Image 1 (cartoon, one colour):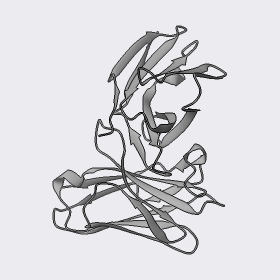
Image 2 (image 1 turned 60 degrees about the horizontal axis):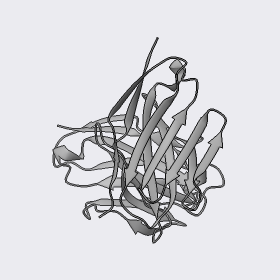
Image 3 (image 1 turned 180 degrees about the horizontal axis):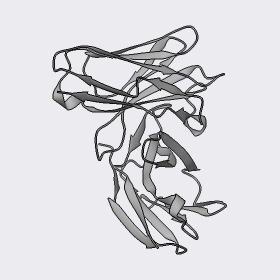
Length: 113
Length: 112
């Protein structure tokens, strides 16, 4: 058990809707990274938050946005959902982005119909 | 651009050694990682190697890095049924403190 929890575990949404996914980070960690993992693929980096600021972003459109709160928990928001957004969304918490000490949550399985 | 490639499947007999291979394209990689993903579970960091190393051993795991060929391998000695999972190779680029580039994963199948 890593101490990183994500909610909800599963979610079904309709195309065009908006969704918010949540991640609570490991105690002592100040950085949260979000990844999208499509079925049969490796994770793709969405963005990272460090001390409540976005400090890196992958190749995802602006309808993917996020927040980090003072307690370092984080949200991923996706607007105008498309069918291709169906995936496992993973968050990883770390201290200052040090991936050798990052812990992943179990993910949220999003299905867009 | 950056790319990490792995074979999709590997089948080994219980007790044998498993060797999972990975190739990457970006010579500026700083760290290379191996992650394990079991059904319904998140990604678990197994081991990593810094780009100036050739080998790293950690109990049953041995990582070999050939920088000239941009080839990384993970050897699991005495493979057990609990090793059944998908194994991901990932690289961290020199100009990025946070972004990992991932392979598509190798599913390790253990035969009794």
